[in-house]
Image (cartoon, rainbow, N blue to C red; front, side, top):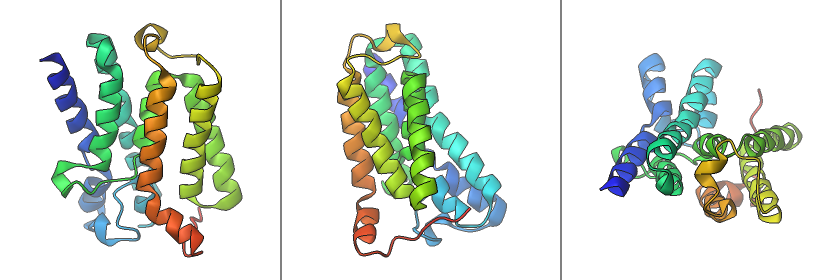
Length: 202
């Protein structure tokens, strides 16, 4: 019963398409018909509204952070289940025929709930790569890879909630997340190979 509740709550939380909702409310546009058609903050930025993009980014981060923290408080043994289902909810939302976002912001929210140190490393790596290449896809994939490799090399990370996640291997779930991030960016990888991937200019 507990795991069913965790799965349900985590999926519903992760599946809320904030980018689509905010863009529709404040601009009257369907985000799925703009740019890449993605519902995440990067595509919201392509509408030209930085405030909506920022709001989407924050809310998508919270979609990962909040359910994991709540699960960690009440059902700590299912914290990684909550994390995985929240991310899957964002990538495959039932409300949009299972066609959601790329999961990067939600992944960051999950990461913040796991480890402040790792989340700071992710943000730092993402920003540096973005400033160099101007491709969010490159930043997202290699930042996720950096986090996995760092955790894999080190047996333990400085956790925000060490008592909650000390009983499982953090690197295992981060590897799953890395595979999911690569999967959601498969089109971007093809575009990068064909040199058709659009850069983001702030």
